[in-house]
Structure formats: structure tokens, C-alpha cells
Amino acid sequence: MTLKLRSVGTSDRGLIRSGNQDALHAGTWLVAVADGMGGMAAGDLASSLTIDAVAPLDVETPEDALVAALQDGIALATARIRQAVADDPERQGMGTTLTALLFARTGSCLALAHVGDSRAYLFREGVLKQVTRDDTFVQMLVDQGVITADQASSHPRRAVVTQALQGEDVSPSYATMVPRAGDRWLLCSDGLSNVVRPDTLAEVLTTYPDRSACAGKLIDLALHAGGPDNVTVVVADVVEE
Image 1 (tube, rainbow, N blue to C red):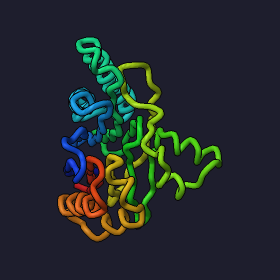
Image 2: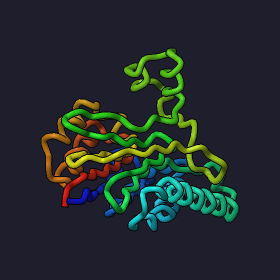
Image 3: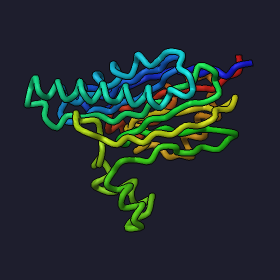
């Protein structure tokens, strides 16, 4: 028996925004979420350029090459964003988050790359854990003990991102993990995580074994909470085959 990744993704512009600046990839080996910023057209372009840059990683990759592959994908995305700004200086300041998970061909390892405030959660044996750390001003305040995590969720500057892919040098975080059969991963933009509590996320991940139904329910919850932002969800299960 070999472990495989099975995923589904969906996105909604929400109830307030006029367009959707999020982009996603939900594949066999790679899942990723990008949340664009910096003006309507430019944010949309930054996220789509980034997903287009990492999507070719959705192939069988040896476990010792996972992090290098993600680093190469991010370098390519950075170069393409830099070129897009050079082509049109009005795009200056555009950028995107990226949270990406790459599964090894053997099923014995996975790697995670993260920059910005889109999130990856691991739901394992009934426990939900946020695996990524937000690159945000309020998370910095939480780390310094200035405010609590509860206060951060309603802080007026909670949308201020301290790091994103903007065509310049950036320091994404990378991690490797050993997957287990039954693991369920949730990757999402802050359009979900800002309005739906972690305990509710865990409840939905438990209650909806079907990936498509689960992703749809999470989108519905974000919309029910006002849908103030674009909301993007990828649900990926580690299964034995």
C-alpha cells in the first residue's frame, strides 16, 4: 500500500469584492493557494502568475528534491512578478501570498512552502493544527506578547502582511513532514480563516468526508459570515492505495 494525495479546490469572490484575486491548484502531487494583493488587476495577475509558476511541480518528485523544487517554483514566480512590474510600472506594489504542499512520489514525505497569510492546517486523528505561521503585523504582535491571538482576530491592522511574493527577495518558510493515512489538509486564503473559527473548521472537516462537499461547506460558512473577502479552499486527503 502506498500513500497518495487526493485533493479538490474551490474559490468564490465573496459578497463584497467585485472580482476574485485568489488562485489555486489542486492536483495529484501539489496543492497550492495564492491570495493576490495590490489593486484589482495586479493582485489577480500576481496570484495567477504564481500558481502558473508552481503548477508544473505537480509531478512525481523524489523526497530529497521536494524543498528544492518548491524553492525553484517560488524563484520563477518572483521573476515573473518582477517582469510584470517592469512591463507596467503601475503594477508596482502588487504581490501575492503562497501556501503550497508538495507530496513525494513515494508517499513517504511532503514539503510545505509558505509566505504571507494564507494558511495550511493539518487535521489528524480529530485534532486541527495550524501548520503555517502568518506573515502579518498582528502575528508579530502576538509573538511579542503585545496582544493575544483572540485580539489579533479583530485587530484593525490584521490584514497587514509583512511578507509576500512581490518580485523582490523574500524568505519563505519551508518544512517537511511525514504523512499518515487519514490525514486531511486544508489550505485556504484569509477569506476563510478570518471569518470561520478553528473549532468550526475542525467540525466541518470531520463531518464531511467527501472532499467536494467539505470544501463547498467551508465556502458557504465564509459567505454566511459576510463573505468580506475572496475565499479559496483546498481540501486534500492522504489515502492508502
